[in-house]
Image 1 (cartoon, helix red, strand yellow):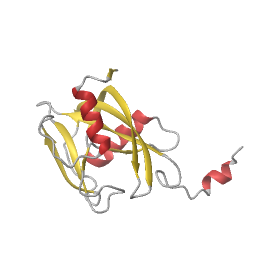
Image 2 (image 1 turned 90 degrees about the vertical axis):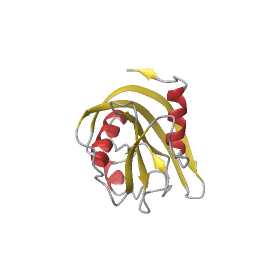
Image 3 (image 1 turned 180 degrees about the vertical axis):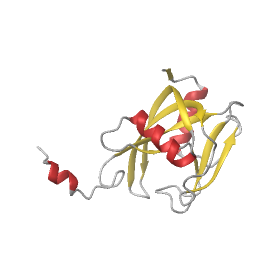
Length: 155
């Protein structure tokens, strides 16, 4: 049994020392465009690639709450989550990382879009679902494919 003191002193790094749990949300605007972020040089991985907003789930929080928190922290938007997509296994051998991404679908509830983390993201932009940039992360490419194939569960 792990003692509380051991947890507090753990030098754990999600995605590096153990499988990280994270995810993101395909957010749609009123034009049915999808919001993507271009990862900057200080991103945890895949700098220069486009991705859906999201991040790491914190200990004790549900994945859906974690993703809503991450969206607010990154984009200043609050969202209504209306669907869940299949998970994505993301193993980045060159970067020595392994992630399990939980993927959701949402519409904007409120807020004005703003890059809240310019140190991590170079750009935020809306794209038509059929005109996405070529350099998409696996954790974005797979959920888009599943969405287009209607492989999701409405909540």
